[in-house]
Image (cartoon, rainbow, N blue to C red; front, side, top):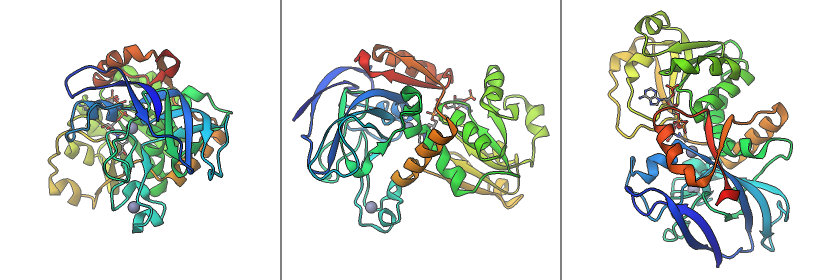
Length: 347
Ligand code: NAP
Ligand code: ZN
Ligand code: ZN
């Protein structure tokens, strides 16, 4: 077994603290890599607090993981010691269901293995995430990371990046489309970068007026403060797509009114409580309400390659792991510019 250092939550009320545990030995199809950076996703905060469902504790969060390969199993074909590697939100899936066979393992019908707060495919071994010094993952769920990009800024691509890239590609968002990005946080700022790269006219819908200059620097064409009723009214019936990255309760009906005919509101944010949607909000304008979850491994590699080609990384604030709790507090207040990334050398 491999002794592993980590930060873990022992239950849903205690702050994260140092913890050690054992990872499995490197199997024939496994890659072990030492973690250099791990992004801090709002999903980490939701899960350590049991916002969505009762979690598996102790919990080591973290699913935006990058580092360098230190060991590979005998049958590993695509990685060698010294390579840069990454892992996102899933570390395995059944591989035989209809969705897995179509490169949609994020929607595995038999339950994929989440990188943490989940179970391996044996359905009994808990998984532990990237707030740790090393990780062992089946090579089919390890991504190649370019050495052309800043490594710390690459970590958030593994979740915030793919979660926004995938729906924009699925709905073929691009030239001629008006895209609204709702919420300018970790996911939102990546959505702006991809929306602009794909040629869409991008508007940020934000509750934080002080983020306007940043939004423009990220490439957004317009900025709308959603707490200003006049600005909201002026934008009625104007967007083809809204990519909703909001982590807290919000008024879907208000945002739906901003879509033009056939417009699509795509949920990627996961507020803890269900929302109330009036049928009229959809009927008027034949609007759709849709959702999207991360992306497949193949699409994650495609996204990483796209980012390497177009020099896209996340705008980050590098933190010491002992400041994790403070960064959660700031994230909760919407005060994130635009992703906290843990420097794992501080562990
Ligand atoms: P984040 O960095 O905290 O950003 C969320 C942003 O939402 C905030 O910065 C804020 O932006 C806005 N916001 C917060 N509270 C709001 C409220 N009450 N009303 C309106 N806007 C509000 O979080 P993140 O890491 O980007 O994650 C966002 C959500 O996506 C989380 O729920 C996370 O769990 C989920 N997620 C889903 C997937 C998936 O596969 N679908 C993957 C990753 C994450 P402004 O200051 O601009 O208003
Ligand atoms: Zn995430
Ligand atoms: Zn499956």
